[in-house]
Structure formats: C-alpha cells, structure tokens
Image (cartoon, rainbow, N blue to C red):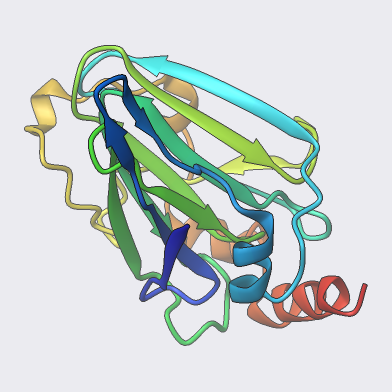
Amino acid sequence: MVQIRELSIPDTYEITPRQHPDDRGLFFEFYRFDRLEEAVGHPLDLKQGNTSVSRRGSVRGIHFADIPPSQAKYVTAPHGAVLDFVIDIRVGSPTYGQWDSVLLDDKDRRAIYVAEGVGHCFVALTDDATVSYLVTDVYNPTREHGINPLDRDIALAFPIPAEELLLSPKDTDAPGLAEAAESGLLPSWDAARAFYASLDNK
C-alpha cells in the first residue's frame, strides 16, 4: 500500500510506500496505478522508462515538454539520494513561479508524480545517485525545453554549495523563467487544465 500527498504545486504528488522488512530484506510497492489514478483523476498511459546515474552535486533540469501531449513523470531513486523539485511554470497558474521539493532516497523510497507542463529538476545528494522515471510519452527533442535551474526568479534552494554544483551547458544556457515566458515557450495554466480534463474523460 502507498500513501499519496498532494504537494503545494497543483497536480504534483508525493508517494510514500509501506515497506515490509523481514530477515531476508524488504518488499514494497513502488508504483500502484489504481491509487495514483484516484489521486490524479485518470490512469497513466506509461510509454517509456528512463534511468540516470549522477555524481553528487549534479543538477538535471529544469525540464518540461510542450502541451499537448507533454510528458507526465513518476520518479523514484532506487539508489542514493536526490532532492527532487517541481516548479510551476504554467503561465496563469495560482502558484506560477513557485516550487516544492521531495527527498527521494533508498531509505524511505518515496516517489514523486509530476503532471504534464510542470517543470522538473533534481540535484544528486550522493555519488551514484540513481533516478528512474516512468513517463507518459516517448522522448521528442523537438518538443523538449529547459529553464536555467540557477534562475534567481525561481530561486531553487540547493542543499549543496553553488561551487560544488555540476550542470550541463544545455541547462546553464537555457533561458530564465521571465525570458521563457516572454518568448512564448511556457505552457499555460488553461492549456494544461484542458489537457488534464481530456485525460480525465477517457
């Protein structure tokens, strides 16, 4: 069984599994489609699985994809630890520009659900931090975008000193939130809500 809690960013959820240890080790359900469907309002049509392995201090994100169909994500950390961020980049959202975070690690074994159109980023807190994603659409580079994770308007609180962060040129060259909004790159709150409603009715 899993416990599901909605985060401060609408349409994002923390999932905490119940672990069952014994003298052999432990067992837990890391994904329950029925419980998540109850929370989200529609089943996930999962189409791809990804895994990344990162050195401590590595930052991946902020990433998002065009709506529709964008890409919802179910994210876990089977080894090591990361601090996972969800960033509301949906223009017109009541929490636009705000973020929330969840510690994903191999102790509590939480997961996070990130709806389509919500920005996603994490920082590795350990070496060999392994993150696995189940996603609702295959990777499409023409529809994938990024926002600079060091953007001061968003002000993500990384628990690692700035000089120890490792970022790709792709992420550091990405626009800030204001620039992305001005260029029309960001999804809108209304478009996101309409897309979620279309999934709810399937």
